[in-house]
Image (cartoon, rainbow, N blue to C red; front, side, top):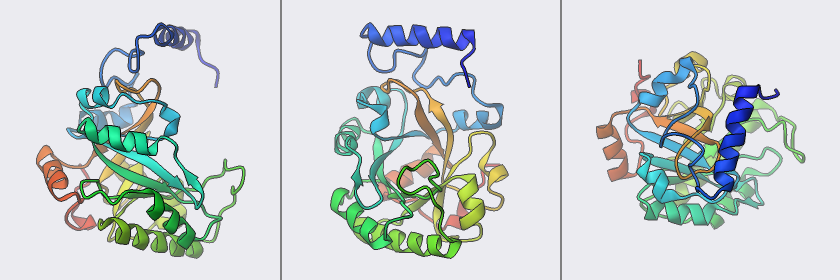
Length: 266
């Protein structure tokens, strides 16, 4: 959809500021200042524990500025399928830790590769860091893929997910979290994996509206967030708990308790 004049003007000004060398994060007015947050997810901006997720698309990140902006955690893309390794992963992994941002790795599931091959790929590229957050398995249909746009049968998808989850837990010693979107959840995950914690994408409404009955640990509430230290748009997330709950996560490096015990934040 084409930009209207006002939004185009903002874009031009922001681009000019960046080109002038003001650095990452200069294109917005505050450390966590999304433009016109959706009313349906406004509550997410007020939740006390905030995070982001990133990949090489974000370019070079100033993690100290990210930390100073009040970001508590980051999920960093590590691997995709059985042969793709994010070129920024290790740099982000080390710099986030140095800046004091709790971080975890995520794997993007590729439906045209064997789950066992993807598990081996993940294990060979993700460090066994005791201080890392639990790993995340990103499961969604990837209709835009040039090499594997097709979907597979629900039973086959569930079988692949089970193999991958078990391998990730064996490698890291931490129970993985499942990231998904409304469409994949409705078509594949509904009623499944009730003993796992979920990270849910919902950019127009609270998660309980899009995922009835599903408890959640993390909520991805925008894909166009603004955070100091990141030059352009970034996914923003909130943790479903209090600062005291988050302190437990950091101490034990787990989303502790059963998935059913997570509040729906209502």
